[in-house]
Length: 233
Ligand code: MN
Image (tube, rainbow, N blue to C red; front, side, top):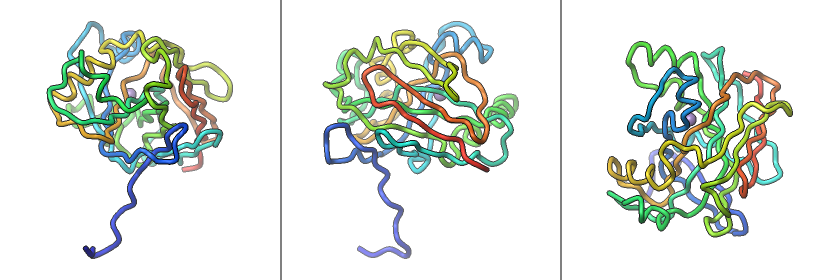
């Protein structure tokens, strides 16, 4: 097969303890999936889960022990961090029941759903799509994927994010409004999940701005932490 120009490289994430990498298919994200975060965004009560996507090439891979970097994105003056547990799908499917969901999971990683909050807010106000706030270049940093069997009690894992050594977000995966299995049930009802899909499961409270020169450290118990510097525009 030949192409009119070279096709883009496959986006892939390292796997803890394995030489083979995890090739990324789609990148799904869950909105407002921790109660205290929903409140800080001005919402209350349990609502059905909702989803958005980021382009696969928005993924920024940060290897174990390395410091990653993202440029300060264009067109924003309010770049927010969102620490999230990322679920990596190993076996696809549709209409997956929550009781069967864990069979479809390859592993887990620490991710950051970086957000141009001012642009997202403007789109919300106008009832327009969120892509310009959520789905921009370099918006999805991720650390290495830990296979599920080695990830420990991920459903009770603490997660936190520090900026320049100071706590910004600190919570526990147990506080997800829609837990991992329920999220997969809802997501696979609307889309055919495939091997390689990543699901950013939502962020707890404490989202706030970062600026050029800041260093973010994200952590989920049992997984490889992620360190990302915010570079120049
Ligand atoms: Mn998020």
